[in-house]
Amino acid sequence: MNNQAFDLLMWARGPGFDAALVIFLGGIVLRIVEILILGRKKDLAPAKGNAVAQGLKTIFSRSVPPEGLVQFAPTTYLAGYIFHLGFFIAFLFFAPHIALFTDAFGISWPNAGRVIIESATALAVLAIVALLYTRLTDPVRRALTTYDDYLVLLLSALPLITGYVAVNKLFGDPQMMLAIHILSVEALMIAFPFTKLMHAVSFVLARYYNGAIQGRKGAET
Image 1 (cartoon, rainbow, N blue to C red):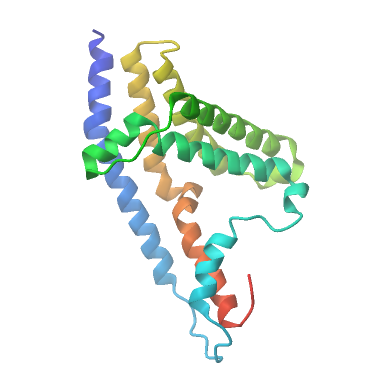
Image 2 (tube, one colour):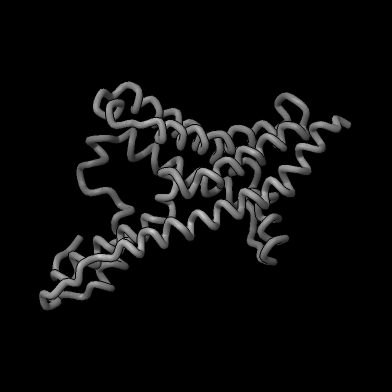
């Protein structure tokens, strides 16, 4: 047994994960509180529509791109959808991941087969590569891209790549590769509240806010 690999794996599964979880949850709460306390000026004009209904509708309707934009930037939209869907499948429907939720919360759900999980993982990684390529080759996107954007792409890709390597035991010590996979997930968790990864939570607030404003005016979004 490789003691160093075993010790690192135990630390990643124990204290490392606990610390990452505290930062992850605490950071999300902090960011949400920051957003909410910003507030907005009271709208004194009489309401012409239902703000709540339009706000809730916008949360879902904005998930569909406006007509014509897919043709304008097909790689950005298609790769974006593929990545999010692939990451979602790999994260929530891989049997060992479900076991973590069962141990922590006592809930479980059916898992997806290994072929589905590995296909979703591979497609998600390819989608990240495609998104990176467009940022590097398109002059406008390259000018708008910050180090934070590159960091987000890297942190999103590492858990997928290291998980694929660990599960298939492609190279290296299996325990070390599993430890590296868990550490990459923890790095993602720690960075989540403080980078653009936070959009996975804040998009709900942003879409509702924009939809509610237009809904109160009687307009569609």
